[in-house]
Length: 159
Image (cartoon, rainbow, N blue to C red; front, side):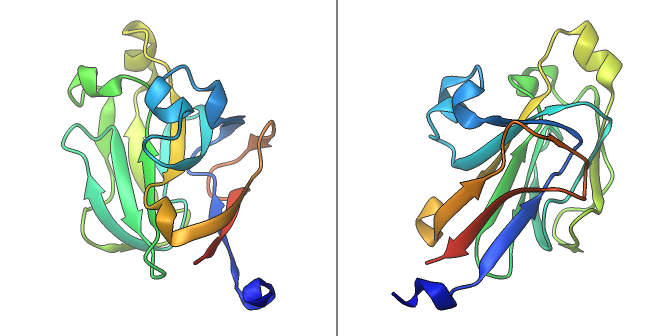
């Protein structure tokens, strides 16, 4: 009954491309929501931006993924591509610095799409709420084309 008074939070597209359901991701961990809940984006450009305001809590050593801790305690994980840990950082350039505050739309990582294409890595990128126990009512926007830093890919309420 009191859910009516709880605020809806939005997460914007960290990259341009087509939004997919997690069940469409050709990776069991993401498709079965074992790493979190959200959507995936079939990336079509080079720059990955922050999907929300918060603290850039971690950028993986290989620059293929990063997490943001929001002020409401929700942790958003952006995992750029599938199996991209295997490139050991090649093709990813860190733009932002780990540990600092970041705003939605701020650039975080630059992708060298030619390296990914040459190595035959998919740039389907899961964008997840990693700590799903903190949220409810995740509403995803899939089967749409989005622009980085502009379009909402999902909304949620905090428990």
